[in-house]
Image 1 (cartoon, rainbow, N blue to C red):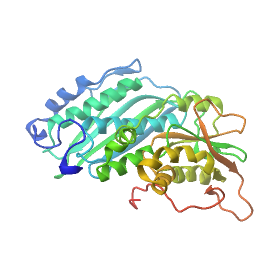
Image 2 (cartoon, rainbow, N blue to C red):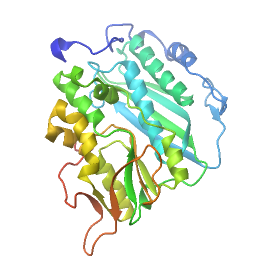
Image 3 (cartoon, one colour):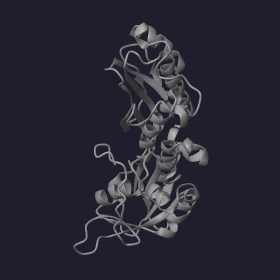
Image 4 (cartoon, helix red, strand yellow):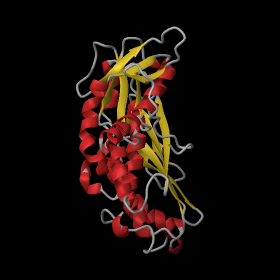
Length: 333
């Protein structure tokens, strides 16, 4: 950031009231009243465990974000982090064809972390959950070494029908996306270079993804054969569908072009294409459908076919292997 300035107002992670000045009960007394309740929540947080009304099939997923790895205090407020970690978890529930019903939150933090930042985080969590009509079921608090802050969320969901897996894509299907491509990665690049004003929508998508939770169950009902949350890039996540399903997915450059063009004036053609093919943290939905079934709001990206003799399952662009790989947590790329 230029001159070390923050993008938006919000409590800093240090400089306020340190967490070490409160005990756990005092901190929980500040946190729990922020969360609402839903009809599924039978016993709210406060006992040893919450009690949630569930159905025969329950979806469970979890994600963790780490200071310095998944966000920086310089450009994300606590509320931003809260929104983001909820979005990425609920998108996973939607990608299975389910409806989110509740979350558990764990905060692991340096005792010098400011109380004000934690309450800002809680406000973001509460707002995101309220928008999705999801109950906060409870969670855990733990101290950590100096400089360490981690937020982990476990989400539960209701599955009314069969789950939509990564392994169901079939020869002749269409690959399609619901939502944007490349915006979150473009926003990250602009934040890193101090040019966030050049595309505010991309910066907003990086800080607060907006998955369409209703699109997942609707796609399942419409006949989606495979589906996942687009979190690690189109090529990496599309490749996961291809390998799990034993098929080849061939992306059509003409169908990718509108997503690239949106970013070209801001980043240049090469970087824009890289964002669209490999940019992570978008949290759009990626799915395959029979060729005669493409629900409203979904945009076709390419075709699914059976591998040729001797060909490995995977993903191509106009019939060619490309080198963009997408995000990997352990290789750092």
